[in-house]
Image 1 (cartoon, rainbow, N blue to C red):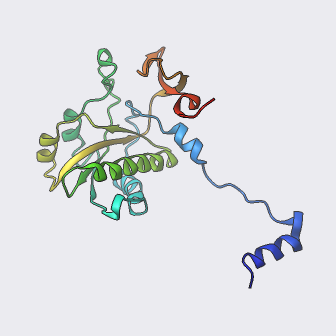
Image 2: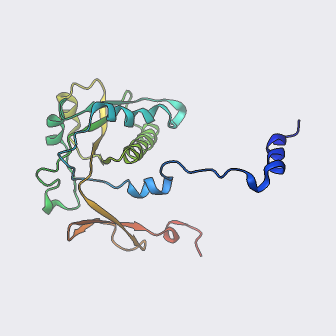
Image 3: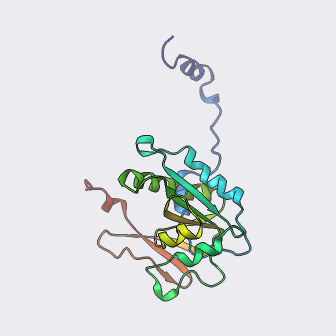
Length: 214
């Protein structure tokens, strides 16, 4: 039987009557736009372990360099050690004068991403894929997050009795901030800033990202 025979017959038979495909959920572009680094969260919303498990579950389906799959996750909620994590992380390094997060908006749920082997370029590839995928899942669920690389690895490993080295901390919660993207030229400042309560994030325009642009 010729390739796509049934599909072609379906087209010939139904033609314009073929049912329209209905989009379900968010598009990738929508998720990417909503996935903004969030440093302030609503205390009234308590992230559950079940929600963290749903977010971490994407790591069973994502690509892995050499398929090594060495990343492991420690899930931390308000009731299971968040108070141990918060003093060991730093947020908003580009805005030190604001001392982010503001009191009463601190995150209280975390995913600590660890590796069973020493960090190397292949592990870092997995780390980036995993972190982005988990944050996109969080956004799909109506939550927000922040990738935190500025933290005390030794003290965090000790505080949570982690069997392997932590590489990233991902904060998760219900965001309490307004963020907007600002298109910029390659030579303009990349530093994020705040004005009248809005967090602005400069992003280089596509034309400047392409090496062969006109």
